[in-house]
Image 1 (tube, helix red, strand yellow):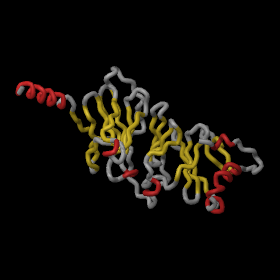
Image 2: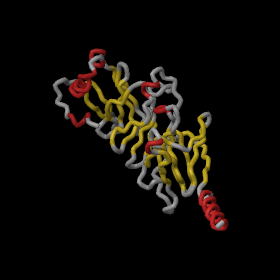
Image 3: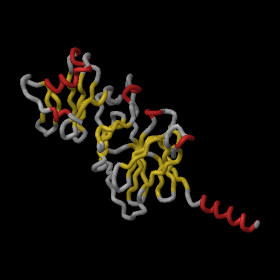
Image 4: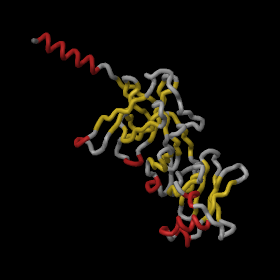
Length: 262
């Protein structure tokens, strides 16, 4: 009987040793990052594992595994993290996952992309320092604009169709855009943010920007703002082929409402 119990205990210990943890240092995002990577082997993919859920947890928590290893992110001065409140793949190959750390910061908790390239794990930070006066108001975490277009804290635009991540050029380099996403162009490359007195527009593909001042009479009537913009403003393509929203020269022009849907 003792031998049987010892064998059972040993098998449990050995099974527990089958998994491990490994720390990865997060690196800054680079504009040429490519996350649309195809694995050379079916084993070279990531796995999202639910770790805490149900009645014992306020919200689900997730871990990211590569093979039998749990990934831990190191990004000083933040505490090392291996549990995430959000985890989702940004490509169908499952070689890149967007995660948000589970901590007391809530929506302001840091975001990362964990990816596998040539069999090696990399962690890229999607966090930029900001000194904006209204940061708490506009740091809202993940904003799903469509099923395949994601905005992260007004700083990064992600298209899951091709796994591209675009930095969103700030109006002021020292602060994230102090406005709320309002609409985008028909090709979904120019994003317009409603600030206190303007529509700040930035093209994610080219980095071009255009700030469109809005009269107080317009911004002070939020219930009619969208309708008035649809009536009096039009997406205009510039010499580079980039669309920006501008005031109509002809107020009688008929605008197709499809131009404004998202």
